[in-house]
Length: 119
Image 1 (spheres, one colour):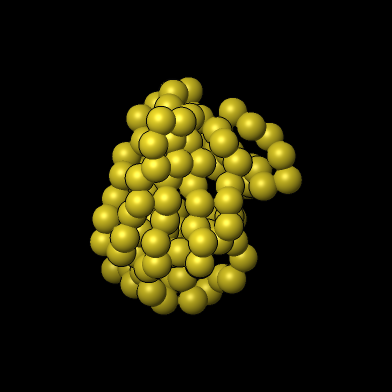
Image 2 (spheres, one colour; image 1 turned 120 degrees about the horizontal axis):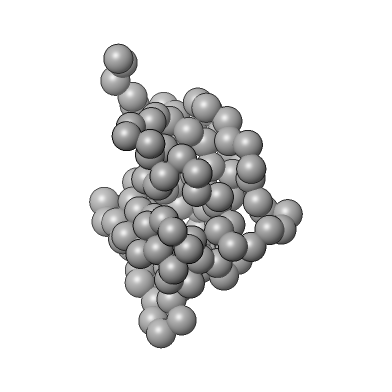
């Protein structure tokens, strides 16, 4: 049982849209990811997804509106809700979601990361 420094963990990688596992609890992964640009529209049929902005700004596009998240803010996207994360500039984001959650949800493309690295 060791403490985790999120800033230090973010310094260990540079790639965008490739979540890293920083911890695990109760069947959930604590994931860290750097985002820049637009992701794919997708949904997670059976899993909620928490987006917490650690650094920068993130927009979660929903089909009926956009939700802008600033540093220190989070949004929980309920299971089954189609969404698309967009970061105009690089954003550092903490995700909390079930360990079985695939980053692209119901979409499989070049950004799908099936095997996550631990940091």
